[in-house]
Length: 290
Image (cartoon, rainbow, N blue to C red; front, side, top):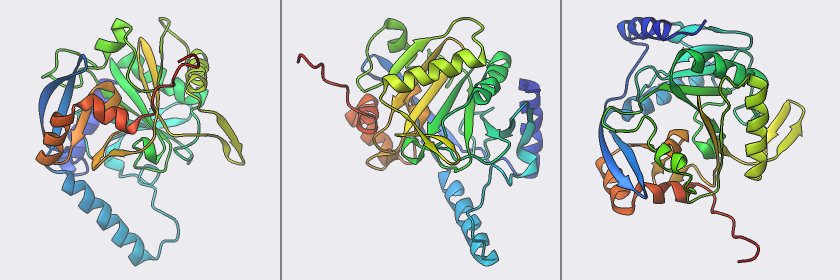
């Protein structure tokens, strides 16, 4: 069963044998449109890129026809625990945040598959043990970098430099409308997995994202990010993966952006983090009587 102590034990082991490669960052807080965004400048993402290149070279050398699945054929040192009935938990190999884990489906499913009740059962288990933020990058255009279906969970707060556990909650708690298309809902205390799944489907519908039936199950009609905390759920449809060179995943809509260089940091500070999010989300719908 998932617990914070299991994550900590796995982290110590994976650091000791080099399987876990945390990415060094420095953080600043920037006020933008009523949110105190956390901006992290990444100093060692080149290590992640080199690792990907090594994997590609290995595949070529072995003449592997199918792409490698790092979440299915994973480094055993990154394993945390089984998560019944349908998932297991892995450490995120290239951690930006300590305790960042992946909730991976035991059998291979595409990342574009819609989440099922079992996925929310995994979330309920983990959020019951750790006060964290779960997120799902639904497709490449939503920031997904792996083909194998997985949710992600990070402990809170997102940064010790920020006064907010989740920076975007300043707007969400005030009832203010985010400046891009989204759907938000509060969660009932002790909400069950079926209840969360039903709410998720409702939020997708409100955002205009439909279920498309295929031979392998229901897939999404458009990319999106899902964020879930114990008390709320947020869905944000996506238009693209990057704003200029700046990649944005689900954590961006929590108010936390990760940047690869000083140049990207300067660019975000100049235009404002909220403008970055608007650039990768969908525009607000214009009222019909406007």
